[in-house]
Amino acid sequence: MTTTNIVLGLCAFTHDSAAALLANGDMVGFAEEERLTGDKHTAAYPQQSVAWLLDTAGITPASVDVLAYNFDGRRYLDALPATELFARMPETRDRAQPRADSFRKVHDRFTTRMAELQSRFPNARIAPVLHHRAHGLYAFASSGYDAAAVLVVDSLGEVQSTTIGSGLRLSDASCRTVITEDITDPASLGYAYGAVTEHLGWRRGDEEGTVMALAALGDPCRFRSLMREAIVLTERGFVLNPPWFPLRVLARNHPRVSAAFIAATCPSRDPAAPVEPVHADLAAALQERTEEVMVHLARRTRAVTGMRLLCVGGGVAANCVAVGKIVEAGIFDEVHVPPAPGDSGTAIGAALAASLDATRRLPTGVADRCYLGPAYTGLTLPDHPRPGLSAHRPSVPAKHLAIKLAEGYTVGLFHGRMEAGPRALGNRSILASPLLSDVVDRLNATVKFREPFRPFAPVVLASAASDYFTLPQLAPYMSIASGVTALTRDELSTIVHVNDTARVQTVTPDRNPFLAEVLAEFAAITGHPVLINTSLNVKGKPICGTPDMALNCLTESGLDALMLEGWWVTKC
Image (cartoon, rainbow, N blue to C red; front, side):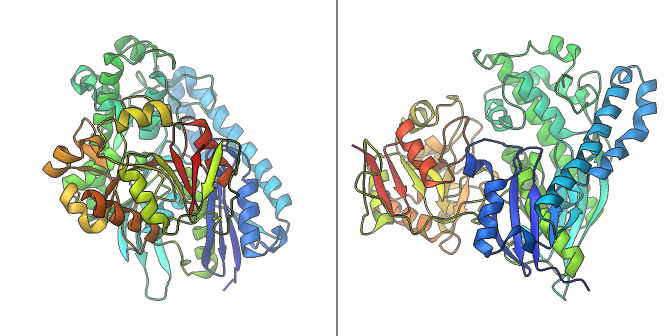
């Protein structure tokens, strides 16, 4: 049996670059490059993330035994056999050859990129991992379940867009995951959602969450029949109708919605243009159809696997409202979404796959963990860390923070190891009291600088969650939209979106002791162990991953203060 001591997993050259490191079968850490460089959704080689991981482990690039990459680029050629069929069909004829050429180009580029990685890690074996395997393995391993169904839904792996399978932990500490069914390009729910996001004037691959929020303000009836014609359910899943969503070409100069789609809905919205009712109605119809497809896929997954627990991965798993619908439908006893369901998390999945293949053992340190990034716990600050800022260290930081939040302060919290994934989970967060009637407008207008219709998520002590939310399970990664109770509607309406849901995070003292202490102290003052929790950033920038970024966020926004590794920083 091969011994593999050091495995480096990479997501690079596409979007959301990230790196994960396993040493002797244990997770050393994981970091998303954008958090360290400030370049949101960067596609660059994750230089700083890799440097931090190697430094943390006390090793050099020459020590890496396996370099696991989150795509198997050889599989892009699997898209080519369909070219002749597409060329014969009137609605796909014009794009058949450009599609084939684009997949072949990406395949050829893969070889060059692997050679580049080999030069960086001269002693490593390069291990390309099927993209959906990386998604699925991370989703399962992070759950802590012994056995579960696995559903992965995204825009595109190599050619797969949806996979159904299962994971099983074996008695010898090994693990077996299988993909039982798949749906391949051009059928892609992520492609459709991204296409409409772009049509509505937001950035595809970045601002789908904005469209999800806007959907709650619209009426899906207006475009319901169109969406059902454009995204058609089948026995095993769904297909996209090319008259509405043209065949995918892996190049920027090929629109993703058709002229017929534009004529039937609305002109493409300029990002600076006002948001009109027609935009909300289109978003609502898209979101409704997405929820229908996701529930349909979940039912198919249950039928195929027979499992009672579900792990959901891939970019579409970030659609917390759709995941909430799966939970609400009662198809599974529990649903798990990993903290980083999108492509950055496949750096972890690729590393897990390569290690598992080599050792037949599933690495440890992944289950039930999201705080995997850099920490700055030894940080010291002068009285005036920057012009216009003052700092001091309270004797009891959690109590001090809770008091200030109860007084109405909006505070950035930078504490401990950076969390994985797109949601701030209490270590790189902005916190505020949900008891203030104007807090949502103030946060959107003066702190986050984003659209006024976007809601803010609550964080609650898990022990009190059922008093405020109807979700029948814990939600430690803020990945499931939940219904709310009458208590929440009456006393904490600021955390309730117009569709009567909230994207809740549940916190336990063992998962995040400091945040749990803050919530308990806030409850002692106000009676409610609930706070608004949003990411420590402003619109268009990534979550702050370094102390300098956090200080920039304080000085450049309407934040009142920053709790930075126990230091209380305010504007003079």
